[in-house]
Amino acid sequence: MYMEQKNAYPKMKNEFNLLNNFKMKTIKKMSLVVLSVLTIASCSKDNGDPLDALPVGVALKADAKVKVGDLPVAILEFVAREYPDLTIDEAEEEDNGNFEVELSDGTELIFDANGTFLGIDDDSEENGDYDDSDIAVADLLPAILEYIELNYPGIGIDEAELEHNEQYEVTLNDDTVLIFNTNGEFLGVGVDENDQDGDGDYDWEEEDGHDDGETIDPSQLPELALAYLAETYPDLTIVHAEIEDEGDYEVTMSNGLEVYFDSEGNFLYVDED
Image (cartoon, rainbow, N blue to C red):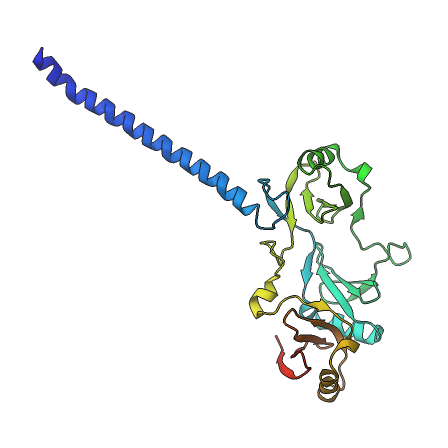
């Protein structure tokens, strides 16, 4: 009897070890699952929106904001020559490679990737339609409407577009942008290609340390700054000006130069990149 129990002991020990290893592996797998869920939930809270607890994905918007000074010089020269009384408010690179430039009076100009002027985007047949296709809310795919009703109840849709890349971009009334494919499948919350973490700081801000300031009319620049520009760059035109959060001024000239001044209008430096 004793010998039988002694011989059975190694077998029982092995079975115990196998069972223990199985339990440990199971616990590790469950821990990884919990960690993944917590990570997704944490990432979804970065933007601070009321619905940030939803474990949603992220997708790139079709159009990406572009720094005015990074536009092809041909575009800056065209605006300075053809619209001398206006400046550039903002610019985007569209998913088809074109640039859309919005002027200070709301006019939208379209250029190709090389900076060649294509036309004015005013949705008229005469000038051509360079914009994405506007979609009435009632014409959106049922799958899209059902997803929004289920996951974003009570917010409502501001506008919807079918982009050149054949994806739907739906902007809600709280400015959240949702991306769907042609089948109505949700791809993610839209972010700008140059602000993929969705924190509102574009890539060039993080690179050069300057925030994306508020666009202003050049007449709002300090007299000292205007005098400096007139004397130093008599053959150039101001195509964009903005005031930054810290009070400094950034001025983009028609040749792409970015000139910086302090809050009093004293010259700081020139960025020629």
